[in-house]
Each structure stands twice: as structure tokens, then as C-alpha cells.
Length: 376
Ligand SMILES: [Zn+2]
Image 1: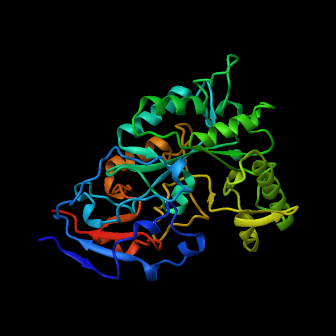
Image 2: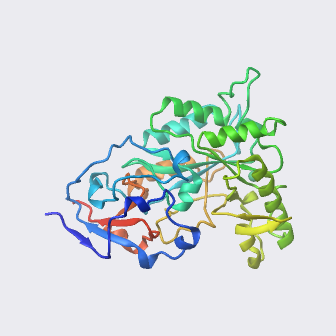
Image 3: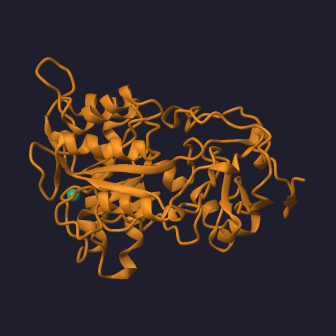
């Protein structure tokens, strides 16, 4: 017999109420009381399994209202042992270039990273979807996030004939998406200073291409300053001026709402930390939903009590001088410790986890927590 204990009021969301990003930042901070919880045993048969290859394209849908069937925990296929409190890797790349260096990945190594992750069931998602807890990858898959800092030319380059260089970061991602079903080229490029990707006159075309293809740009400040001893005014100038510039390159409805801290640095004076998230310069206000560090660990799931969108760790996507905590080390780690990895249940509206994760699960209002007993 299927045991479903409804701990709180309604389990089913009305389809008409569904939004792709169903909660605001403020709502997300204050969620525990309204979380809906279902406990099912591990042996219940899925009422309706979901096609593992069916994935909506988040880039296009995040602002739209969708009409979907009700979110039904009984539809979750527990044979995947979904674990949506598990860790998520946020990868940090810098250059793509001809030789491996500490801050440079070769195109072949980058392709190899993508292939290894793909083969092991990892799929890239947008950073903003991670930060908002909108995770839409097929059942059994693990989301991860790709980031590039500094927006160098080798990240996005056109050849003389107008094609995208297949050996630049964007070229590798687009080719990989072309040849790998279910792979969307989601990546965030953090731009410092003027002229993303460093070829004057191409910046608007390149930014438009990125946004059209499910990629994003984020703030990396005007001058790549070390934040440790900047004043409140200096912090807001280097962040706010860059935000205003990047805003001028993007459509009106696009928000520059993520920042990668230069050198991963933070103000020594804690009272200035709020300026990393909110501030304004010369009449332009900025607001960040994700603040990214440098190094060293996999990030917490947005559904874990330790998740902190203002303190998101990244993993260096390199094999040189990574002190055993680089991309390949962590891939091996999750091979050896699969129970720590985020495993999707395939439904972005339902957050499934083994029952013994209950204490660390924190699910935003509007999503359904689905705890279940692991089968023996
Ligand atoms: Zn940088």
C-alpha cells in the first residue's frame, strides 16, 4: 500500500499559480513555516513516470507562465533515489588557451571536462536558476554551473570568416550542445571593465548571442579591485558603475544580478558586506541574487539549510596547483561518495530527498518537499 502522509495542508500546487521562479528573495529567506511536506515510502510505484529526456529550456521559460499538470509527489520515480539536498559544483574557469596553465584550460581539456561530466550524468544549469532554487534537469541527473571570470577574448572570439572560433569557450560550449542531447550551453561570464571579450565593436553582438543561447553575463567590477580595504563609496562605484555599463549592453528586461568577487575578496570591515549585495552609484542601483567566491568546495543545494546565496563557493576548473580540490578531484569525490551528490527528481516544483535528510532540508514556499524512505 502506498503510504503518503500529508503533514501540512495542500500538497498539490494549482497549475495556474505556477511560475518558473515561484518566490522572491525575501520569500526565500523565510520559508520554513510554509513548507509542504510529503513522506512516501521508497517502494511506492510511480503513478506516472516522467520522460528523462524531457527538459524545458530554462533560458526561454524563466519569465513565462507555464501550464503544467499539478505537482504530484506520487509521480516521482524514486528508483533514481533523488537527493535534492545534495551538493552542486559551481565551476570556475578563466582562460581557454593553447597550453594548460594555472588559470588556463586548453579547448581539449575543456571538452574533456564537459564530456566526463555529461557521461556521469551532470547537466549545466543557469547560475540564476541555482540561486533561485529553480532546478530543472531530468530525473537522476545532477545539476552543475559553469562560470568564466574576466571575459577575455579567448572566451568568445569570432574568426575572420565570421564563425565563432570552435576553440574559444563559447565555441566549445555551442559545439558540445549541438552534439549532446539534453545539454544546454548554460554558462555565466563575469565581466570586469569595458568591452566584454575585448574586441571593440563586437561587444553588443556577443552579449546578445550569449543571452539568446541561454548564457549569462555577470558583474566582476570595473577595476578588479581587491575589496578588502575599499570604502563604502569605492565598493559601490566599482560594482555600480560596472552594473550600469553591463545593463547598457543588455535588453531592458535583463538583470545584471550576479557578481563574482575579484580575487574572492570581501571587505575587512563586516559592516560594508551588505554593499556586495545592494548599492547604488550615480543613480544606478544594483541587486545581486548570487555572490560568488573563489574556491574550493562544492556548493550547497538551494534546498539545504546551509545554502547561502551571498557566499557561494566555486571549484577551480583546472588541474594545476589546485591542491587536490580541483574539478577532477571533486568529480572523483562524488564518484566515491554518491550519496553527497544532488540527484534530481525531474520535477522542478518538487524537492525530493531521503527522509534522513529532513533536518537539513529547507524548501521555499511554493515548492513541495517530498521525503521518502530509501529502499533497503
Ligand atoms: Zn577575475
